[in-house]
Every structure is written in C-alpha cells, then in structure tokens.
Length: 327
Image (cartoon, rainbow, N blue to C red; front, side, top):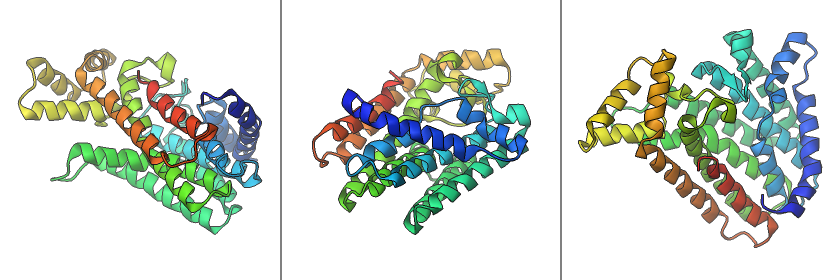
C-alpha cells in the first residue's frame, strides 16, 4: 500500500478476516474439512479481502459487516480456484498440488460448491442487497468461464472478447470486493460507484499481468506451472496478439512457426518448455505488459475524484502493485 500507518491500522482487521475465513471453511465431515482447507492452508495474496478493508476506510472501516464482506469475497475466490484448476487441468496451485490432483475432479468440484455455499451463508447475514450483488457476481464468474471455454463466435473480435472474459472472470469479483467494502463502510453512492469501476479495471490489469507471468516466471515464484494455459489451449493475450500479427501478414517465419507450435501438441514437457521460452522472449508479451499498465491507469482514473488522502494513495499503489508483478 505504500503507507505504514494505514497498514498498521488494517493489519489487525486483516488477521480477524483470516481467522474467520478458516472458521468458515471448517467442515464437520473429515474429508470435506481436509479438501476445504487445502487452498486456505496453501496461503495466497488475499488481494480481494484486503481491497474490501481498504475501501471501507473511505467511510467507517471498523463496522463489523466489513469483516464479513471480506470473508465472502475470499471464500468466493477460493471456490472458483477449485473449479478453474479442474477445467484447466492445472497440476499445482499456490505451490501445492491442486485439489483435483489429490482427490480427483469430482471431489474438487464439489469442494468448490461447498465453499460457494459457505459464502452464500455468510453473505445472507449482510442483507438482501449484498445477496443480490453476490448472485450477480457469481453469474458473471460463470459466464466468463463459459465464454473462455467456448471461445468467440464468428464476427467477434478475439481480443475484445478476451477482455470481456477477463472483466467477467476476474474484474467482477475484484469490483465486488471494493464495492462491498465501501458500501458496508457507509460511503455515499458516488464513492461506491467509483471504487466499483476501479475494481473492475484493476481486475483486468491483474489478469493481463498474470498472462505475462504465465510465460515469464517459474513455478517456484508463482506456485503454478508455466505455460498451463498454453497446454490447455487457452488463448491468453500474448497468443491473441501473436495470432493477429500472423493474420496481418507482417509476421516473420519464426512468428509463424511459433504460432504453429502453440497450436500443436504440447503434452510433451520439452515441447511446452520450448514454446514458453520462445513466447516469453517475443514482443507480444511486452505489449501485453503495456496493456496491463493501461488498465491500471484506467483504474486510477476511475477514482480521480475521490478525496485526497492515505486511502486514495493506497488504492493507486494497489493497482500499480498488481501490474508491477509482471515487470
């Protein structure tokens, strides 16, 4: 956040959120308890609950509802990870084996459903408006995953289509994290709208940065296997930009070979490593990093009218930190 005093104020609340999160995932059934705790115990950045706590500081961040809202958004995020890892066949998550690698696909999917149920239980205590917001966010998360799975229709611009997928799959929940924080902090509607717009843009920036990290970082750094999206045929932004370059006729022979290899069989680890290495060195990854910066600037612009102070400065630093990971 870049502000030691604000971090010191938020840290005790963040620790309370962590305690409540662990309580929320606890299950009386032994297997369900082990599977539900799997990703919580693996750690994570907890970006969404931290954003909830931070945005609540624009009003009265000490309200108890703010803590529950922070738990809701992280529970929802955790639930999506169980489902995403099954759909992506991701072998690791947060440096640990993905749940489906340990217990199988069906158990992983059902665990995600259990966590969605727990999130719904917590959000029910926050009132009907929060329930509606949670339901709308859940719908967008599902639509984002659905559209990513089936791909664009004829006539759709693949890059614009992908940006909408990112807005739905990632931006929607980060926007809700900011929205619930400001809302339960008692902020005026104008401030709630600004931080919601900020969160959506920051979420897109975050995912674009992840597209860079997916090919330029190692598993020890990210907790995920590099090139997982490539192996599963998920067209991330660098691949879409490369595909556009080849279609334009301005591509080199090496560009065309790289795209052909991306579209080929990447089940072999050596073949995947070769593609990841060549793509990581390609200018389309730098272009993706610049797009992430542009979306971070959109996030900053969304809160330009917020009162000057520690919280606004920290929100700007928060958006910058999301994309600095890809530098």
